[in-house]
Length: 142
Image (cartoon, rainbow, N blue to C red):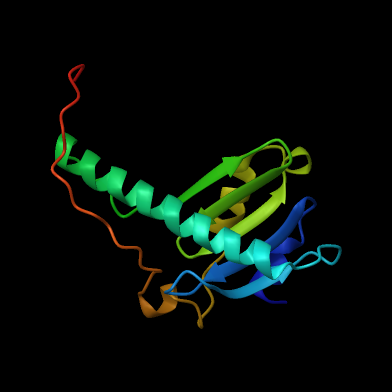
């Protein structure tokens, strides 16, 4: 059984995968009832790259502002009315919110799994997203 077979086996998990260095989906596994849509997978890649860039920029700015390192950014998740999404390092999971219980369950699934020997993390690399460095602006309320 592969890493992704295990990740899609819990009730409510629809898809699991890994991003390549260019944010394209390098590997994926869908639950048996899910029909893979190339447009949806491309959209997931695009949004994940954008969100990761935003969070990396925030982490960089907060590290400068607070003198505490907020990097590296290891993972994040979002839960909506119907679907939830979690990302940890270069791996992701999509699931049905109602069947999962909480976004923490998705993140826990990703944290428990060791990256495969073929994965980016095994080589010490992560997907790259350009981070724009800016001079932090101190908010008046701080």
